[in-house]
Length: 271
Image (tube, rainbow, N blue to C red; front, side, top):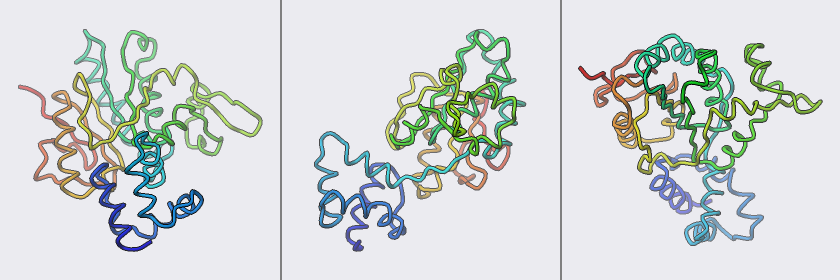
């Protein structure tokens, strides 16, 4: 891969998806090399010509699937789910006591572990009242490949090893003797998976109460990150909670969010 080819790919991904790849030549080349060679393109410029001219969007989706990192697991940064159950949901239960409509968005759904974790927390919290609340979680990602895995909801015994036993028994069923488990249909109904590019205008008809945007903004530059955080703020209900990854930071001097903990933020409530 030449520097010129990397520049073309990185500019395309930055303009379309906000991703910074200009310093990741080895990674970009490693993920694309076999695909480009196997499909008969002689260089990356020929491949990008195909990406940009494919009116079906297939080659662009393929490019995105190869270049987006999707590393997640059940119980990751569990302190956020503890806070969701102990602080956020009691506030929401009181706030939405009449309409019983919760709007929660997981903006980096990956292979489904995070939105299913949120759904399990909601099921636990609401208990016998669960069917009287509209609490479907919107779970989005730019990668169609990982969303297909998420919608299947199939995980190995090893992937579920950190889950509490009662959650594993309640929300998963063994599907074969090799130790694979699938999310129950009941829990699947609580999550709506959709492909979405965070750089596009938000399509929400109503504002969100809770937004999980964990471990995705590390791929954005400072300006892209500031702009995204501002749009998230504007798309949230007053008092709504915003979660980012525990190793991530946002510019505290430029955000209107109140800082609750280093990775938990809140939109100011109306007075």
